[in-house]
Length: 185
Image (cartoon, rainbow, N blue to C red; front, side, top):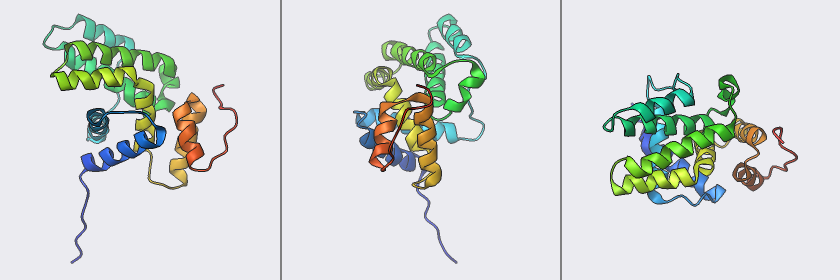
């Protein structure tokens, strides 16, 4: 009988996030990289999906929620925006929003969390993600892409073409891709 060793999902995504952050020169700290990996692990869990509410509805619910519930709601908004901007940017057109709006909503949610959420360490991570929201979304896009094959390269190019992200452009150039003008330009 053959035994197969399976790497824990958290370790897998943490390695992918670290590699993507290094390639994109995103400047993420250790804790921030670990946090982004945990966002991907949570998103991969059965029953976890993108929020059904709009970002404006999620923000209104967070603003109106009692103090004990507010961190959870702000985090749902921030993580939802991070996943949409990074991993599911094709969903933006279905939501009638652009990546700039998505990034603004996510960055502001993490900004609020940096003031009200969790321990000092967690607040520092939220502040880092808020300040580097677009870089974090780009790191998630690369980390969540399939392995080093043509599909991954195509997904990276599609994400760059839709967003004109300089970090994704640098990653593509590092893989030998010659870039023209992005589709979103």
